[in-house]
Image 1 (cartoon, rainbow, N blue to C red):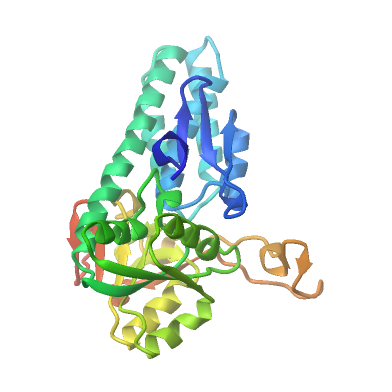
Image 2: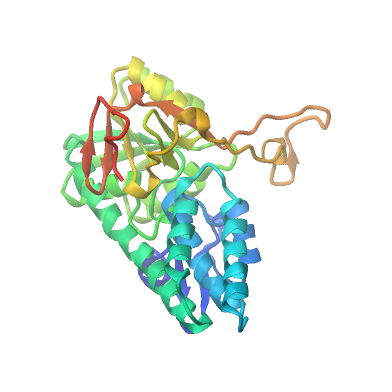
Length: 344
């Protein structure tokens, strides 16, 4: 789909920097951006130039590797402190998505016993590349497990973007759809636009249309009506964090899950084990609130009076009681979902 065999975010070995697809420019402009310092990476994550839980884990891992190249202190204690400070700076950019901190901590741990900056760079890059390559394998496995649950002919509703752009390649929710199509199933997709930043219409529809998988975009509020009309056979979404009692995904996911339950439509979640949080409960998780201007403006067009405030949550928790099955790279989890029995 894109350069370097379809990778969304990857390491440029010639220039020792991160390359990523700038997703806020899609679908009109496909552009690869070089990222040469941690501050630029933090900006890319905050502004959703890089987004999607698995992609954030990969970016976080590469971010620690990038930090090892940005510092050169002969005192290893001082050097590792600078790298650690950069790591925690990156972790603070998106508090709800667990993959980001998971990827960062994994690479940070890999360099903790390095004796020289050069050794730290080798270890960090090796671990970060490992995270990325593992993600592709996990997404393929998720796709194979999940595809078996889809009828030979069906229409699937999805929300936000859990495709190749949210991962290293292939995707989670869209990976299930891609795997089902590859297995010969007749799958069409209804992509919710996903307000306010339109990841469904800008990214999911773009990906599927490039793959020649039939897709239509709807307003988020149309989903229940299509379910009522019998035009939706299954719902598949990704996840940014999964606790024992809830799935955290793009705001609006909970609404689709409630409607699917009422209409007796299966509601599936596709996510790698790195997205599972076996430590916290839903009530512990900080839900990211984003800027008012994301609602107040569409491009340069003002949509709200200056005097009106906005509530702009990025995610919502969907209770496990609404989830039909969880597709992971290790297999399929079905109810009852018991604390301590979820993967990693």
